[in-house]
Image (cartoon, rainbow, N blue to C red):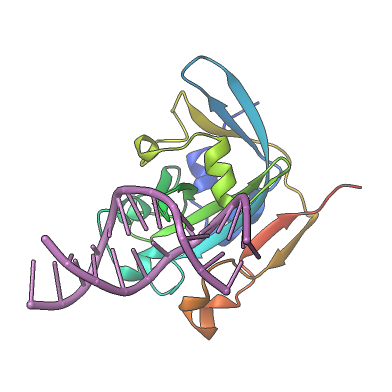
Length: 172
DNA sequence: CCAGTGATCAGG
DNA sequence: CTGATCACTGGA
């Protein structure tokens, strides 16, 4: 199966977030083990004006990667314990990212980072040529629902209720 | 409900 | 340097 390309990641985060549902996140460990994971839940973070997006604080060492063209990994440590895995989307100088909130049966972005053994060394990793993490194409699915994003009450009424969380429905 | 746990950022 | 904050989780 083909890797997702520059063309895919350059799209707006709202598009990428829903199109990533059903795609395959592939992880190659240091010991050579390869694991493949169905992406089941995502959230979109949309630029400096989105008060829930880290880039609303402007360009900092941490947010810098979001200002790149789509296709890079944005990871950061939260609460001193959990590595949050994001995919940078959009075009240069338009800071956006999509948070991977669920894979396979795993619900919760903190658990995703733990399962995939993410760490700081993945900051800026290029999903289009990395040999340890990438995403493979799969048909788009229309079988998903939306919901407000989690854990961003501080962002204010205009932003905290936007339905920018995308959840693949159980195909039962 | 709340503690754990540490990088990051704004402010002196 | 200091202190607040944090796109979370698991256990009272």
